[in-house]
Picture (cartoon, rainbow, N blue to C red):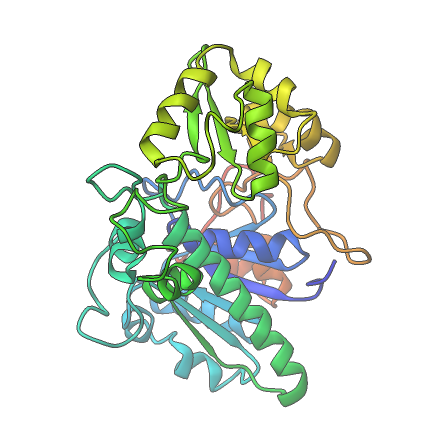
Length: 382
C-alpha cells in the first residue's frame, strides 16, 4: 500500500473533502474523520467514509480543540473543508498547528481560494464551475448551460486535485523535511482540469455556438442516440476509419452519408437508424466493429457489464453500497480497499484513537460526560 504509515485528519465536510480522504484511505493512509458530536444532514451518512475511522470532537470547547491539536502532533496531513478563517478562529489553522509539527501537510479545500473578493462567499459545484469558465462549454445544443452534476468542481477540480497536491507535498517533504499548506480552490481546480477546453477556445475545436462544435454534441458522429427500448448509445466515431465502421454497422452506404454531411442532416439519419433496434442489439453489432460505439450504462449496468466485471471495476461493500474500485492500479503497492469495509458511525473510534495518543480512561470518561468528545453505541466501554 503506497500510503501506509501516513495519518490524515479529515475534518468532516461535504463531498470534496471526504472524496480526498477516500482516495488517501484507498491507497493505505490511516484517515481519521473528525466529526461533530451529533451528525447533521450530511454528517451521519457519508457514503465516502468506508475504511475511515471516526473521532467525534466538540470544537465549541477548549478541551475539544486541545484534543485535535494533540492528534495533529502525530499526523501527516490535515484536510480543511471550511471557508477561509474558520480554522484560524478555532486556533487550529496552519500557523497554529505547524508551530508544533513543521512536517504537517495542511490541505485547504475551498470554493474560491483563501484570498480575493469572493474568498468567503458561499457556493456549490455549479457556482465554482460557472466561475471557472468551464460551464459555458457544457449543455450541448440546449440554450441552458448544464452542469455535469457535481463532478467537475467538487471532485475533479476539488477532492482529486487536493489529493494530488497532498501527494506532491508528501514527496517534497522527503527532501526538505518540511510540511506546507496546499491551497486548493475548486474554481481554479475546475478551470485547470478544463485547460484543454480553455486553450482550445476560439480555435477549430470551439469556434461556434455551444452545441454546434465537434465535441459538444454538434457533430452527428460524436453524440448520444436513443434506441428502440428507450435506452441510449454513445457514438464517438471521429476518425474516418471509425466513421466508416459506424456506417457499416448501421447499414448505411458511405456515399449516402459522407462524414462531411451537414451536422443536422447526419443526426436525423443516425436517429432514425438507431431507433430501429434496442440497445443490446446495437451493442452486439458494434462489438465486432471498431467504431467507438458503446452503450450508455447506469452504475448497476456498468458493474455487471462483462468487460467491467472482468476488470473488477466495481464491488459492493458489506453495507450494500456499490462502489467503483480504486484507480489507478499499482503493480507492487496494491490498494488498501477491502469490500468488508463499512462506513463508521460517528464517534465509533473516538476512545480507541484517543487512548493511542495517551489519554487515560479517567480523562476520557470525564470528556464524554462533559461532551468534549462523542462516542457511539458500538464503541467499547471504558
